[in-house]
Length: 105
Image 1: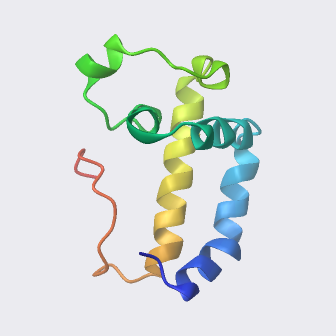
Image 2: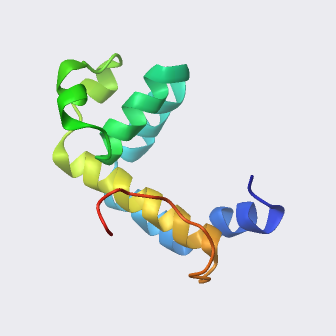
């Protein structure tokens, strides 16, 4: 659960604003992901961030037309955004638990 200062760090982060500005499709993609619920949402987020099982992901189709046209560039932009939000939440503290990307990064 995030604390108030972490929400404030996200809301005031210039790095997050810069990341959002790098890909004008990010707001559309985030809105499409936000419309999904339950397992569909979790699966779509994992696929969009490139952390899903590739065999399983290959068997699924995007349910939202906005996500159907997702490019590798879009996926990289979403990943950068997630990493930037994570950095804002951590506040420069490396000992704070972060996201497990599963790729050793």
